[in-house]
Amino acid sequence: MQIPRGCNSPEEYWELLKAGTETIIDIPEDRWSADDHYDPSPETIGQMYVKQEVS
Image (cartoon, rainbow, N blue to C red):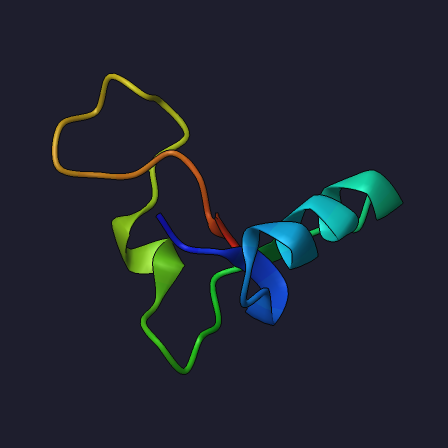
């Protein structure tokens, strides 16, 4: 499991949740092109249907 926004402990993660902090971001283009692997249909084999990740 990836812990979002640099939380280093369960307590920090809990504080992030209590604050309602948004941790979903678009996949950065410098990592890889999400568009190359995206299809809006969840049934499409070999493609993903989301372009976001937990930051």
